[in-house]
Image 1 (cartoon, rainbow, N blue to C red):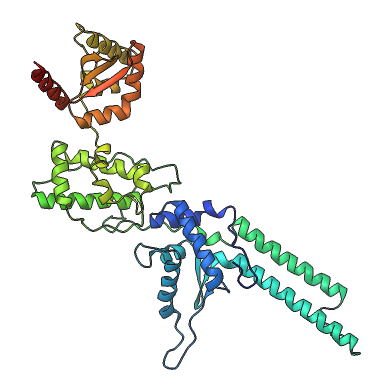
Image 2 (cartoon, rainbow, N blue to C red):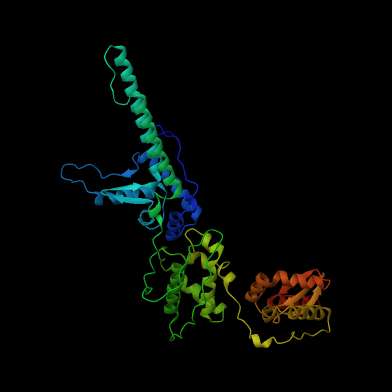
Length: 423
């Protein structure tokens, strides 16, 4: 693309990890690399649409005075159209203003990303003007009249070159060293609408890709009076939105989706009526890499998927006082002896927390070299497999077996029915 003699769009090395990029992406709820892609599209558009690097007010016309405040919504729409922004109208424009990528100057708005190529264009323009003067002076000298004095002496040309070199070096140093972007420190994101800013809150660190925020433990929720099912579902939805806006500052709150009440009633029955476990699942989803990689991030619709929310539901924790010694298992069978050995090894290694969960699994049989363990329900199996599956497999292999297979009560019923039919 060649526009005005310029055939490139340059991105400074430090810009992708600058505070401006991290702050703007964070406030918009976007992944940093997705935001950088939008910025590159904005630069390509600006080379064509903003040759001066500025949004200038439209000229005054009959019956219409020159008014930059009336023109700014048009500039905003053009920018957000250039980057294919699909979020709340005006949010992308406001994020660029807050982080200093856009700067208001008098009655115009300057796109600081254009500073580099605007300087190059101005330098080329000056060079072209200098060469034009030299050609004119040569033509005048050959015609018999004295050449124009300005800019023709060797000393003056040298001073002009040194001045241009100094200005170019200072501009490049400013772009690379961040001096021209010194105003780009991100503005602290606004608190959620219902949050009381007068109270002390825990500071939020801007998270970079590959990391996530680990929240402190929240105080226990006060006991709430009985509520009808619809009100309870709507209240939990608002709590979900509070957690989402706290995890991703600047993202807009969602509207209550159709079917939320039905999902809430079903999910609550699956966790034994314990809303606290649903809230824990909500927080786990919002803190996960999967939830953060969605666009838009952390939506309630994605969370409600049958294969998503169950991943983050912790099983009820047993009483820690129950595990003061290795749990006792019936060792009359090969399965019982292998499982007793595994539990004893965990106790000797001091892994009491794992025993809190694994002591609820019961050895059933050994089939094809695998220890069959019965578990209470599907949520227990999912939790234990994700957190202790590799550990249990290693212990089982030490016992000379191939591995472990988890069995649900429904699997046992199916097997018994098949045995009865065979008889």
